[in-house]
Image (cartoon, each protein chain N blue to C red):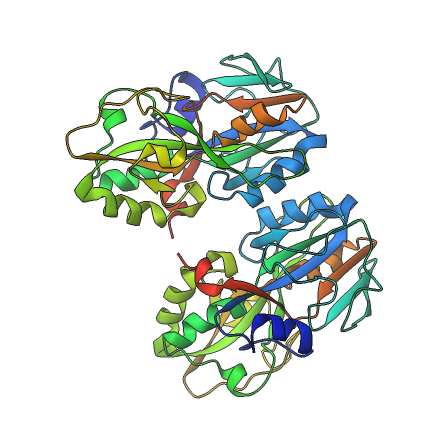
Length: 250
Length: 250
């Protein structure tokens, strides 16, 4: 599928779709909260590398010229005062004129590079959504926004961990190098088989869990900080852009 | 000199001082303009890679815990409605309670890495300030802020241009790879011997001019966009941080 076909027709998780094109996380907030969100992303660049910010009231982005951000993601989350209210496949009836939308780099973007380096992706092989976990690492607060860092986890064969680090370190705009390798308790994760978002993945023998900072982190901040209103993507259900993923490779 | 000694005692250009420590550009604007500046930096990451943003009314930064931003730069520029009013060595009498300060990566930071790679720096050898030029490339506007990109130029021996590109590409937080190599007219620069900021530099035979995006770009935006008030560093007179420059190396 092309990026445009995914945006128009697909309503499930987007890992592995439109290979070669960058994918992005979404968070849209009322203009009154936009500075806090933008400062939060600047202060927490590992989980929140910003790829684009819309002008107030606009639902178009330089990342895909003909896309409409309020319709072209596969699934949204509608938040009120930090509580999840709906998970619709179209956000146009919820969109407000004063929203500013932030597109944040997604680790799905470096998976083509991992595949090219012969690093297997267990969760894709198993037909699942990537597992994500809320950690005990606090982000640096910004104005009214605070909250913990969220990570995505991929099981990587022990002898390919160095390759996975090298490949992803070259792509800081889509989270870059892992934030941790190995023991989940170092991040305050109690049970890898019970992710906070996405699906449980089966490791192969000799696999090591590797953790990347995740663009779901702003949703954890929404839960902790309770802005009156926000629209985000549903975890794993990303905005597929028209930007080649190689553009984010140093 | 240590970074702290430079901050307290030095009042000239800072290239080559406190080697091994990152240096930063400064722009401080009233809170009402802070979102526009932050969005401008996000939309123009090559000239404006943000290293830190202060909270409103604060003059301290995580980049140097004991520094005071209104006193510890060697020279400031005070701007009113886009016009340069003063160039004082201390900005404390001009500072306002509603200012938000942005610290932006400076290309002086990658010069230690260039030296380690045996790339000579002509302007340092010649005891001058780096030459900077306003280009004909427009930045992507953000709210009320717009203006052209400014570049710094270093003459590099032709057979070391690839080394200079490789070394600096690994440091995107301090402008990264050059934006252009060679013909100044491709950037709309008429005469390399007449820089808009800093000093003229003498090339050696076989040198090629190499251009990096420059953190003076926000000052060009101040001139073009005329916010009511702003405080910046004087070009080449940087804020010397306590952060090792290797921290910005991938």
